[in-house]
Image (cartoon, rainbow, N blue to C red; front, top):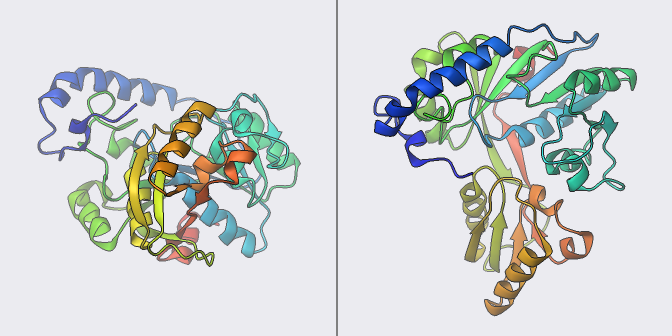
Amino acid sequence: MKAPGFWSNPPTRPGWQARLLAPLGALYASATARRMRGAGHRASVPVVCIGNLNAGGTGKTPTTLALMQSLSARGLAVHVVSRGYGGTLEGPVRVDEREHSAAQTGDEPLLMAAFGPVWVAKDRAAGVAAAEAAGAQVILLDDGFQNPSVEKSAALIVVDAAVGFGNGRCIPAGPLREPVTAGLARADAVLAIGPEDKVARFRRDWAQALAGIRVFSATLEPLQTGMHWNGLRVLAFAGIGRPGKFFETLRQTGANVVRMQALSDHQPLTHALYLRLDAEARREKAQLVTTEKDAVRLPMAQRRQVLTLPVRLRIADEAGLIEALRL
């Protein structure tokens, strides 16, 4: 579902739609608050939740990958536990990128499994227990900030700096799963992802709410693979939270983006859809390009015909963030 435009309004001018829907937003917030009163499974190892307050993509997957790599480099056995959104497996099951498909595990767990142990489990507590039994020294809980089934030793809120917390209202009056103050009260740090000017604006616009919590910044940057993008005619498609970010990153590489196809987040890449995109690319004499997350949803035969533009998260003060998460 595409987010309504008024969700992006400034909190001081949320729009008449937000005001009209405010009572429903208050009910949504109350339901979240009641749910969070439950006691969760307490693991014997640190469990760090990487979550958000906004509905939709904010950059949790690249954040999880960055922390997986950083903590693994420090000699820690890091496991990820995910609900496996969009997948059919109940779990808990450890994801095998050679055996499983995105339809079984969800696209994000399948992508992350190339970097370390990842478990999918509809019951997050069972997933955490399975990771513990398999020798995890640190567990990264992918999403689940508003789910009380697992007790978190630390929590990181990931924010797209260009969007911030939107108009500051809860669903359906705004993009939030819970009020900003309630969410930040349970968080140990905030990671704002975006260009320096966007991060600065986010800090300024939400200064009062962010008082007393450490805010870190990060940028998504193309991974240098030796691929020469400059001047390459491409037809780009993406089914992520904000496809426009991917298209802009592609332009910044120097690629000639002749056509853009924005899909909904996690949208299945059917054979018919691929054939249409492939036919359009041929007419435009362009190369199909997509994100890493979208690529894992393609059948292997089609995946070989599509280029991917991998991106990695660069955290400005990675050591400080890890310290804030008490790791």
